[in-house]
Image (cartoon, rainbow, N blue to C red):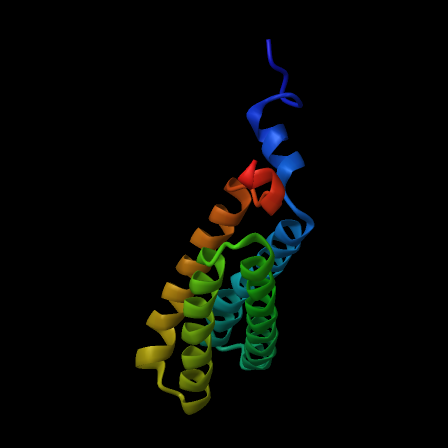
Length: 142
């Protein structure tokens, strides 16, 4: 009988390369940062105008982590020959950048739906990077 430690999940965990763990950590930080954005926006819409400052600061943090994640996915592509994380991150970062400037311009007709789509896309990416192993090339090619 296989224990939880000896199951297929444990094998996938042992096979994940350090750059894969770096990607997981970055996507997790990105997910945590973006989760606060709708909260700050909602509190602002209830009349607490100080939360707009928190929403603005959160936008800076989310965008910065997004660009950091883009750099990490370039390394994943170069080291592990996996382009999928880069393509997904590039799409999320492009949407976040458009959303950032739409928010600065007050274009809520674009800012709000793009924000919902960005949170959904990053949630899917978060689930994907934690479900899939990122093995070293030598282990994957063997």
